[in-house]
Image: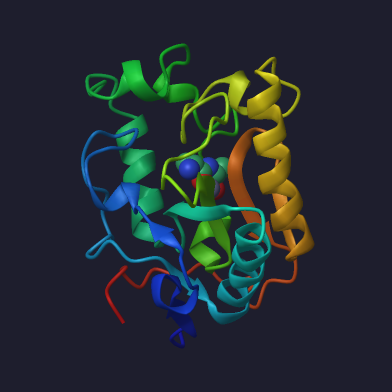
Length: 204
Ligand SMILES: C[C@@H](N)C(=O)N[C@H](C)C(=O)O
Ligand SMILES: [Zn+2]
């Protein structure tokens, strides 16, 4: 199909912290994921623009955004699916899915077999304190596949306020959250609502 109009959000969004977890080994597979050839955050142009709006609004309150995943090629999702079918490989279980069977991650909605990330307008992200550069408390770490990562979980008042601050900024910029994962947001008005892309993640 035609090449999507993706931009490097690390360049397009002033102050954005980029930590592409699936390009390295610190993720729920415990190894780099297929299709991530460079640790860059690619997003469809209107999604990058909306992210810049959220980042600018948060900056006025002393916060910034750190992204963990952006555009995700279809081959990366296929890698997730293959990995989930191999019960012998549990390298990252203790850190990422201590209380769920890896074979249930799709059925429980923690990982999608057809992901909005592959359309280039979905991001996984958290808040950082601009002064210290440190991530704020969110109750659970990114990609902890557990009910405590979802809406209505019993977490500290501080973590609840931080989740709400992130969600409010993203909402105002045009993104919708996801009830099971505090870090996952999709642009409501997607430029490619019906296209799953598979071009690898490379520095543009
Ligand atoms: C795997 C996790 N970071 C995520 O993005 N989950 C949603 C459901 C997805 O895979 O689209
Ligand atoms: Zn996500």
